[in-house]
Length: 340
Image (cartoon, rainbow, N blue to C red; front, side):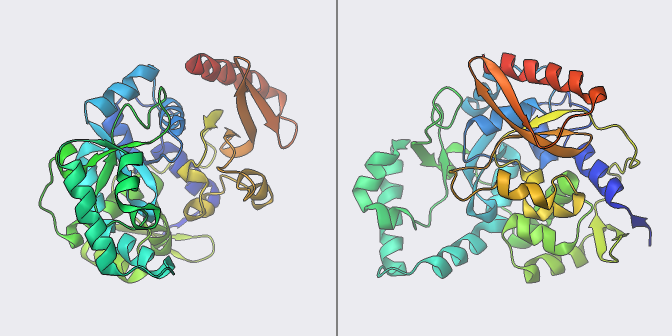
């Protein structure tokens, strides 16, 4: 079994995330390749796609949301993601039971499952006539019941967009995106292919961590699938879908800017050495409402950035080598222009 070095895994991740070469594909296809995009903060959708796509007008992302070719909803890890319309229902079916179990485990209040079911019926009835503002839905059932409704709902534009960042308008997912018939087993296999296509090769536990699924749901699906296998330098077995890129470790990785909560920085991708452990407390700080936006140099996070006064300002973890400095400045100017 071939052993892959940390450098090879790093470059494989960057290639699959289109951070080595920007993609000319459509927005839905890029999201499929990425495995979806975490989207608690609406501008992250736009910046995450801009970093991975060639010639992306900002308004095109909003149009894709309006045309329903991409959609925002709660799925992996019970977290808001934006995915292609064709990925939405398979991923929802794959993660639905785990999301319900997670809420049942963390909820410690006096309300019963029957209470949440009744609240879900109330919200469904309200949404049957079309999208509704969050304030009306919460008023109808109360904050505690709203937090635990068992209903597939989506963010409806213009909410959750660059122009109106507050995600305060919701619709029934079944009305917004036509449901498809798919079993949970097939949905989990779909999810695994998306994960490995965007983040592989990976150990099985990384798939479960990213998806929010227990490992006993991942292993049977892996055993059914026709995958290829590698080893990591620590001896652990890696799985991967076939015919995906595995660049050499010495392939040059360009400067790239990442939004808050970019998935390549989360714990499931730790093996790819995109971010040093010494920098994690800076980027993921419990005193902040969200993670810090970051930039990468030569395949690793080298600092944080912010947009202010019409410019992108960078804060470096260490002095940037001269050979990367101009590229960093040019990419920062391009990102500032995307904001403007």
